[in-house]
Length: 201
Image 1: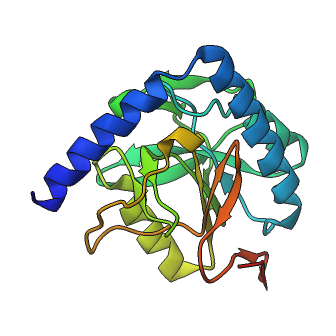
Image 2: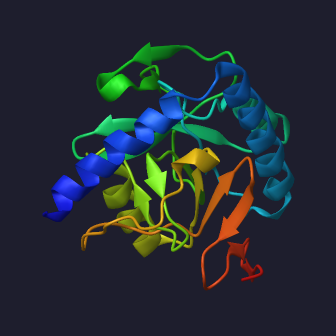
């Protein structure tokens, strides 16, 4: 089976597991993830933080967005432009518009920001830090460009049921520095760079 077919089958299986989570379990797990990110944020570099607005059965990030804003972080949401993402500033209460791929994007005119911390959505992940996205490659291309320009931190945000033993990878796929689920933080071999300091391996 070619890698693209492996990814498609894995994506379908893991999304079915995520969709099957009881709504109450999903909300409790989302709240736990938000609390852990906010605790970790004390060690983030002081640049902008990209977050994603939840769609379908993803981790609900709305309380996380409010918490980061309350801690004076510049929060930004992804906007699809061509084959990559740009990130527009967002504050709780700002207007959003429906866009392609099920995204909710800040309205035109929001300030563009260059995140130093990326909180990344995903379909599946493994403990090597490999991420299976939704198949369009937006985050992979964007992270590749951003990491060549400045030090960045990438943390996948997911439920524990999205973990798999092995995510098939292709040359363009970018690995994450860590993954955070309701079960805790998984740090990829090599450690994390928290605002210029290296965290535990």
